[in-house]
Image (cartoon, rainbow, N blue to C red; front, side):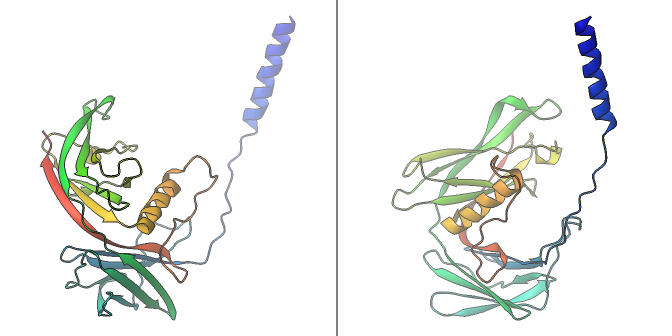
Amino acid sequence: MKNTIKYITITLFAAALSSCEKAIDLKLKDTTPQYVVEGVLTDAAGGCKVLLSQTKNFTDNNDFNGISGATVTMADDNNNVYPLTATSTGVYQNSTLTGIPGHTYQLNVNIDGKTFTSSCLMLPAVPLDSIYLVKDELVNNKDGTTRKYVTVKYNDPAAVKNYYRFVQYVNGRKEETIMLEDDEFTNGQVVNNNLRFSNDNDNPARDIRPGNEVTIEMMSIDQAVYKYFYSLSNSANGDGNNAAPANPLTNIKGGALGYFSVHTVVKKTLIAP
C-alpha cells in the first residue's frame, strides 16, 4: 500500500510539472552593429579579395550585409600600395596583385571615418603529396552507403612551426566544416591527415559518393589566422566549457571583427571510385 501511495504521489507530481509548461519568449537585446573584415591574398592569380559587412541581430536574416563606399588598399613590404575596387556591394578586389612567399602584406580599410588595419606574412608553400579516400568503418551515410573521407599526405617541414587550413569541394560545393592542422606532434614527419567532417544535417550533397569530383585546397597559414579559424570553429560548435559562444580571435586592428589571411594554396583533385 505504501508503494502504491508513493507511485500515485510521484505520478501526480510529474503531472503537475508537465501542466506548468510555458512557452518562453526570449527578450534578446539588439546590439550595435560591428564591421566585419574578411581579407584574403594568395599566391594565385585573382586571389586578392576583401569582403566588408556588418553584424546583424540574432533575429535578422543571414543574408550578406555588404558595405559599400569603403577605401581598401593592400601594401607590400616594399611600400608598394595596391588599391582594391568594389566589384559588387561589399566585395573589393584587385585582379593583378599576387602574393609572394616570404613577403609581408598590410591591409588598410577606411569606412565612415574608421580605419581598420592588419598585417600578415605569406609563408612558403608546403607541397601536397597526394590525396586519397578512406572508408569510415563505424558510420554510414543516411541512406546506408559507405561514408568516405579524404586523407591528405604531405611532408611537414621541420625548420619552422607550420599551420594548415584545408578546404574541401565536392562537385564544386564547399564543405562547411573548418579543417585545421598544426605540426605540434608531427613536426618534420610525413603526415597522413584524415579530413573528417560531420554531416549532421544529412545533406547528400556533402557526402563523397562514386563519381564525385573532390578537390582539396591546402593553405599554409600563419599562427594568427590559425587562431581565428580555431576559435571560430569552437564558437560555432561549442567547446564544452563555455555557456555561450564568443567572437573569434581577430587579427584586425581598429575594432572590427574578421581576419586577414595571406597564404599559399596547393590543390589536388580526385574522382571518387
